[in-house]
Image (cartoon, rainbow, N blue to C red):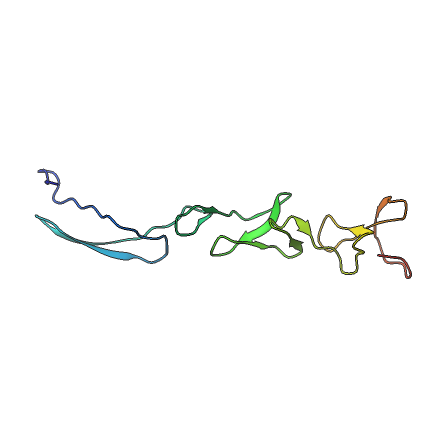
Length: 128
């Protein structure tokens, strides 16, 4: 590459710089000038890994309840579980067959006829 009258020096870099908080120092020795400069690569917001192709955006709605760690892995908010943290963790003691929950720390019980009603308080001797 040959500099024009308006350009003092041009430089290109061919190599791999992985995304990170680390700055990389590069040097260029040209015909008219020597340059030392620092560069770094950052992924766009909500993108992770060495190619910025892993997507994770925190959410707390019907599609999931999670935050994203430094690697872009989902971490469930307390009271939620599952691959996208969409399954509520029921109140301790909630019967696995006769009970369920739509929100953390609740227990919705079914009677023998499978009518649904919300548990207001536990009555001794009843299956919860």
